Image (cartoon, rainbow, N blue to C red; front, top):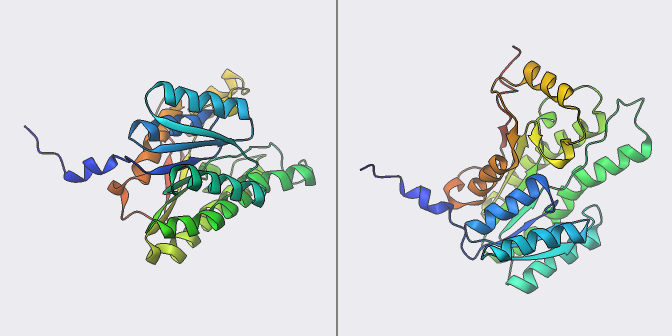
Length: 260
């Protein structure tokens, strides 16, 4: 019989209150379900009310606790309302997963100014707003966790993704800044950097094009699943990761290991 490290028991999040933006599908949905499974009370947040309601209902049907909220993460008033709703409903906030994002295609000469502004608003400004307004709540709880979805393009860009790559690189350095500024308040902040994940956001990519990308850039075979990213989210949100902060953690099938 193997004696497992006691830290593995710290994956439980019973009674913790978690907010997940972009919670209606993909990584957000999978993370809501995973957080609820380990005992968290989940606020499922997203732009489309019907989608976040479906996820909240799914969690409730499985015996968990979740409530939906419609939010535009690029607007400060909406983000404040979302956080206040979580605090008023569940008594506080312990975890914020800034996961909402878009991924426009285009180089700097191809993408419009409006597309650029929208991408930076949803992918980067939202992280600033989420942190700005949740940190006072985390302080009241004696600490907490902020997680931000950055993606591999925040580490190394690909062609024709100028706005997305710029926004996600900003997310990584903003993550480090938050971690540095609030470590003494026992607030941890990390970035999750998924590679090519099997989500609705990538569903429009032709199978042949997807397979060519994976063969050229990903050493480990197969599509990354949203549930695998959610497992990393649960770990980083838990006390098992209490000494991890300011990091950009890759879950990319080895894409960033090197050229091959």
